[in-house]
Image 1 (cartoon, rainbow, N blue to C red):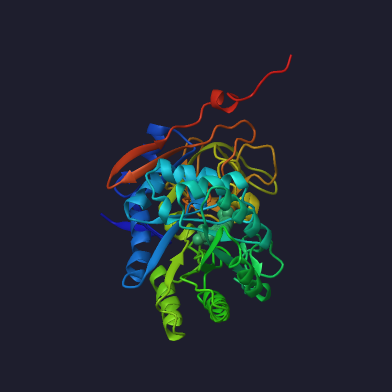
Image 2 (cartoon, rainbow, N blue to C red):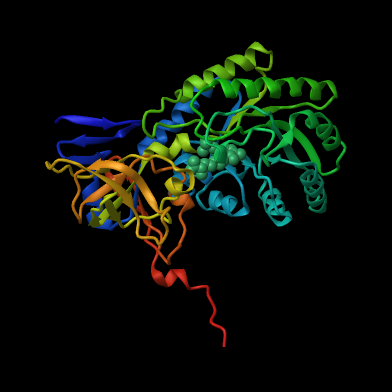
Length: 425
Ligand code: LLP
């Protein structure tokens, strides 16, 4: 049968009029599980992870999935089964890793504000490393570790001051950002770290942004990191690993990000060329492991043609998928079953009481109430950023594994939403 693959998503294909994901017709899933519904291809996630693993093979490395992109247990288990570690930013994420069967010894703990109780839990679980972002955090961590009779392995997240050329909200490696220790201050902070009783220096870390579509910013950041590594080691402090963070982009529309293996090959080549090939290489990809594995299915509720704009109101909203409202992100929207009619231009919007509640603007679609639409590339920062705004229960999630559809998260109920609330007298 004739198959057309959609941009960036080899597991998603149009067969005749219908949209299929890995042998499952998406309209059937909407009928069975209801909408809004997140659907993921497990094989797409596996393929994305093994591309990194193949490229890293043959040198010491640790691939840590940045689970903030999609922290559903089934997704974590998929990556844990492949031997991946995890990049976490809270004790909550650590608990999820452990619940999914992940290995704490392969966890790196990132984040600009860690609470002492979170540090304690991570030390007790035996995480691989803390990515420390300030001198004050070092002091607190040292005290917490000493109190437990442990030492905390750390790397400093260095702000290399390079421009990742991405959206300002997801650009993190510039001087003006809240993240990391300034490059020119880092050497002194390492020296101090080496004197603290609860701290053991093991690495260096950076993360310059997200949805990055060129390799140059990574190589610039890497050069800045290697300069520092040389200085820090000259001070007698060994650096075992280099963590390049995450950030590799995906195709939402016409972006052409480098393939993961090309990025890894170039990073490896630069590390080797500068004589640092013996160090362990860590990476923390999030979006590029899950983004194009997922879609959000939503049903068209009401059509409201107007003088200036035509609105197609659907049952998914900014609480289900925040990216368009938050970053003006462009995400593809296609019907699960194509109609023969001529398309009209619609703003696809949700039912939430905010003008910012839109999923796509000026989209050419042939759509009728009751039709199911798929928002594409929704596997990353979709469900993970969902909220209950407007007392809307969060969507259900389905994982498609070789033609089998598995419910991996039940749809929230309204009762779930105020279960923990207390009525005053
Ligand atoms: N490591 C650290 C320390 C991070 O802060 C992040 C993402 C990652 C790794 C993973 O980056 P990725 O490979 O996914 O680009 N909500 C935004 C993206 C925020 C990214 C935050 N940090 C969005 O929907 O575009």
